[in-house]
Amino acid sequence: EGEETRGLLFNRDAWLKAAEEKRALQIGSTKFGSVNQIKSLVKEIAEKDGVLAKASFFYGANASTVIPVLSPSIANPADYAEGTTNVAVDTQAQLKTTEITPNAYVAVLPITAEALKLGIVDLEAELPDVFGRAFAKVMHSGMVTGAGTSKKMTGLFTAAADSTSGATVTELAASQTAIKLSDLATLALTVSALDEEYEIVMNPTVYGSMLADSTAGEDVKIYKESLIRDKTIEGVKVTLDAKAPTSTSAGAILCVAAPLSRYAVGIAGEIDIEAIKKVGDTNTYFQATMFFGGAPECGADLYAIAVAD
Image 1 (tube, rainbow, N blue to C red):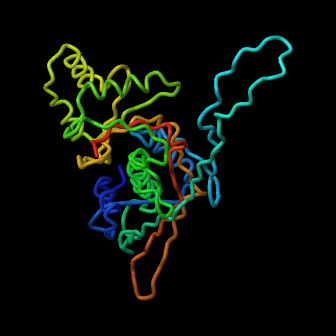
Image 2: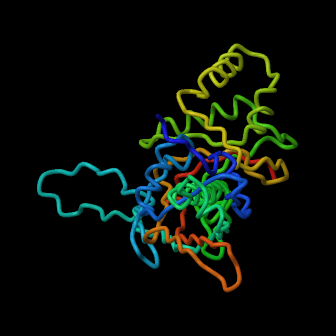
Image 3: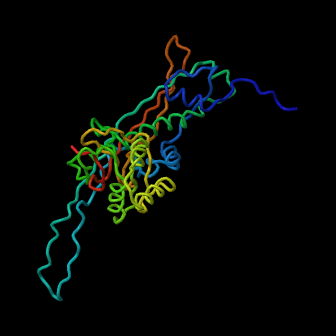
């Protein structure tokens, strides 16, 4: 008849949680991974919903990734008579570069000898997925609020708050700390006219405060209905992200409108997973290393609503 199944019961959620918390994986616990190229891993992650799924990924074992950006763009061409010899030279367009320098990210996951040898589950076959999820979470946080210092990813909210980036920031009225629906509509109308698809990113808490807008008017009612039903306003998608900031202090950015496909993530090579043994220690330490960085391709692409200084 059927072969008897004995050994370790696999609880995927428990193992994922244990890996994220960097707790030792024991036989009384659950299962894990093998070595896969980061390209396939990140593409799998990118198929899922969220801001990271919309980013552009650049792969290669490079010390840095340099992206040329024409900003401001070339001026509108003018008309000239036949045989003209005095066509004006464009002085508006500037060719700039955005440089992404990968940073090393490392996670170490200990697994006991019993879990590796005595369990029915091939724990090592799960490691790429487990570590991939962990690295994806770091990428996600970096894309939204990364500090941009010491090779860290530059987040959308960080770039929008940086006045030297060229970001366009709209301030709320004095003493106003919550976005009004009319403010968001104005932002949406601004970016809807641009030739890239924009999304407005904000924290659910900021979104909840905005929906509390009690301003009277049929337009406010329609905006609320559109946001609640479709998460759109004036045709622009509103994305709620728990990693987005919630601060309402002076100068704080409450939401960012960005073409998410113009956020660049540079990944240097593959994810490396090494099995490390120590003398006198029965655990195997799986050390995963990944090199990546990220930044908006052009800070001038970003539009935001901020609390007044």
